[in-house]
Image (spheres, helix red, strand yellow):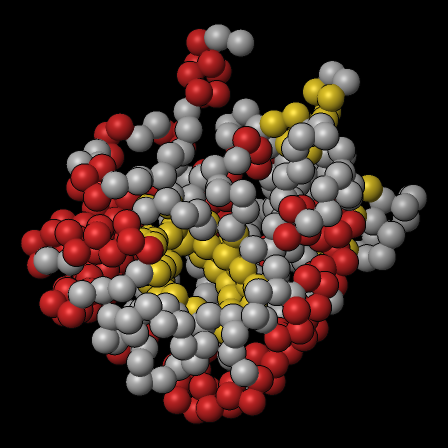
Length: 382
C-alpha cells in the first residue's frame, strides 16, 4: 500500500481534549477523507415521539471506525448496527471533552435520514475546573462559534451537552448563554434539523444532581435547548407528570434507557423493551444508551443474530421513517467483507439497509450483503 491509499489509511478522526485545543481548532487541518456526507432532503418527525441512540463503547474511536477498518478475530468484536430505520437521532459518545463523530457513522446515519450528534462533556473535578475557565462571556462565544464550525465542517447535525460536575454560581448565567447561543447558532448554520440536547445532570443552581425527571431543577436548561435526555433512574409512575410538565414539547423529552441496566426500569439488556414501553405509554421520546452492550457483553457471539434479537423486541415500540433520496443503490452491506482468508469490517463501507427483513434472511457475520434462503420472491421494505 502506498501513495494516496497510505495517506488515506493514516487519517484519523480525533477528539478534542482541552479548551485550548478547541479554541485553536483550524478547519483547514481536517483531512477531506474524514468529512461525512451531507444529509439531503431531511424529513424529520418533529412533533412526534423519537428514538435517540447514544453510542458509548470502549471509549470510542475504535479500530473498526478507521478508514481501513479492522480484521475480525478473537481480539475484535465490533458493534454492527443496521436497524437505522428504527431511530431518529444517533449520538456518537466518548468521555473526551469534544467528541467528533467518525466519518463512517456520519455517512451511515445520513444515508438513512438519521441525524447525528457529537458530544460536549465535562466531568468531575477536572470538569469543574474546565467549566470555571470556559464559562465567561468572551470564551463562551468563541467556544460556541468553533463548535458550530466543527459540526459544519464534518457535516453532523448538533450536540449532546453532558456536564457532570458542579458549576460555580457565578458561572450559571454564562452556562445559560452557552446553551442559548449554541442552540441558536447551530440552527442558523445547519437549519431547522439541528439539535442541541441537554443531559439531565446539573441543576439550575449548579449542583451535580441527576433529577430523573423534568422539574424546576432542570426546566431552565430544557427551555434553552432542543431537548433533554433524562437520567435512567426515573420512576414509572412519574412519567405521566413529566409528560404533563413538558406540555407541547412532550416529544423533546428523551427518557433514558441504559442497556447495561444501571438503575433502569426492567434492568436493561434484553429487557430494554420494558423501559421503552413505559415511555411510549406516555407518548415520550426515548434515549437508548450504550446499545453496544450486545457486543461488549457477548464476546465472540454472533453480533448479527444478537442485534436482530435485541431490536425485534423493540419493533412494536418504534416508528420507521421512509427513504428520503432516490434513486436507491445498495448491496445491503453492513461493512463485512472477505480479504483473502480473513474477514474484515469497515464501518465506512456500510450501505443502505432495508427496514423489513422477512424471516429467514438477514446480513450474516462474515458476509458482504444479504443471505437469502433460496430462489423466489422476497419482501424488503424501505
